[in-house]
Image (cartoon, rainbow, N blue to C red; front, side, top):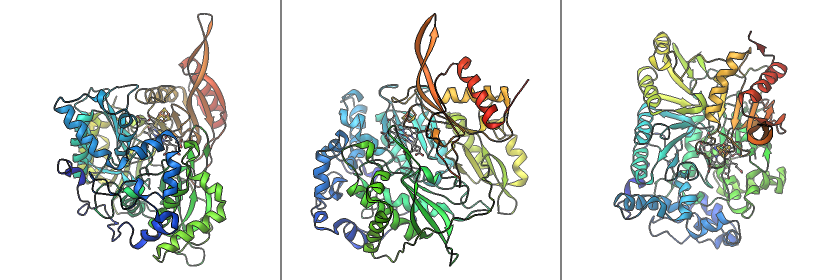
Length: 604
Ligand code: SRM
Ligand code: SF4
């Protein structure tokens, strides 16, 4: 079996973005203290190895008392103990083989695998909307992809129906492939691994895609190049330090999802304030050395939406410091966070339980125990002075002579296979094959020769009637949307198609003098981050009179006044509720908000 799966065990050694190839092993060097520093921790199941992977499991790393808690914990904790997620890929291969050979059907896949465990390898069954078909979520550290990968995504989804086999750019500057059938998954996983990408540990209780600056290395106001840090952190969480294979069992049984963002400039394009760990670049007040102020605990959910708080910590902007700090926090989070109430299993709750200063002491103690010479200082004064957050769309000069970046709108982040191939061709022609993804679900072609820009703009992909746009209006160019009801079983409303259509309608109705960020999210989980938006539209209940009767109809809550960047602020309370989604109802409300809150003028 293992040899059948050998492609999933591709060695990372030759991969160019693997910057943190480590001399680490579980239970030695740094991790000896991390794993076994107390008596309780010495009672881990560390010696147990999954006979199919030959590696410890996620559960192997949990202290005995945590295993006990998990056993009494919520159903997902129990499921994780019963069948560890770290071997899920083997089952994907096995199910696929059996389905291909006619030994079983997808309906016979074990329910716990179908609904939960396969998420560990990024396979999310879209059972409510498209039974038998999966969304496959990748990991794209710092949101950087290339033309070959874009063509591969297109090839992967091309065997499915045009509407269902699409590629999405996510709000974590990541890629999701849609329509995937389990029997096709091994070829996709192998193809991804051959292209230095993976879907492993991208969903369920994993550390999610590393968000960095989409302008890393091409920015005249860059404080820190985030690429190295995103790659190093990605390796920390998804590269096994012992076998150098995909999937790190040390982080294979976390209590909940975990988000990390590294900002590269004062713009905070990475949205540090809504991540569990946010690293904000800031020079040391005395030495001038570049480092990061650490903010913690930002998150959004049905139960609670919280803006990150200062951890009163500053670390140097070097790889060891960034990795060590994150590892220390993850270790404490893994072993001490809530295992019963999933709603309280996000980092903020743990930080609050400690209190900021006690938390800082605990993290510093953990870091010291690793003995890597990493120091933590108090938070440093953030850069001050006038600063205007910059635009990612459009054409902008780079510090490199004669080079520009070209930001392109991808409406709602949705790409057809054809558009993926067009983007790949354009990247090959103008940006040395490179494409940057943004958390606004758009793309940037970096390093375009200034004298080639006109030619690029004239490419048929951006022609009249095409969806991809190099010069969209201030409203349609700044729409973000979560997946919504087309594919997501939790959605209360359809989002992406409504978002795209409504953006165009608003462009026709009003003029605004600056970008207005309208975010859509299908339910209160807020994957579309409505609380950071200028105007956020969240699926919610609404009633409307139809044929003389009050009927329940698809509706929304509207949030106004979220801010991103240095001056980030979350709009926590709805501005309006119960608005039906119909054009007759929603459009006039939005036009009114645009006029009163954002100075829009109606077009006559
Ligand atoms: Fe999300 C669950 C989609 C970013 C908060 N999210 C889901 C699921 C997996 C639910 C499901 O099983 O159907 C959605 C899959 C739908 C699908 O078919 O695509 C889903 N989330 C997304 C994506 C694809 C939205 C998008 O269109 O871009 C984003 C994928 C990011 C990635 O590449 O990894 C996505 N989700 C977010 C964000 C934004 C962010 O990370 O900046 C948030 C708020 C920030 C946060 O997590 O704190 C977010 N998603 C949630 C939550 C609430 C988390 C909580 O603590 O309760 C859930 C529900 C859950 O995990 O139980 C959720
Ligand atoms: Fe699904 Fe809700 Fe997330 Fe939208 S916000 S993708 S509807 S879970």
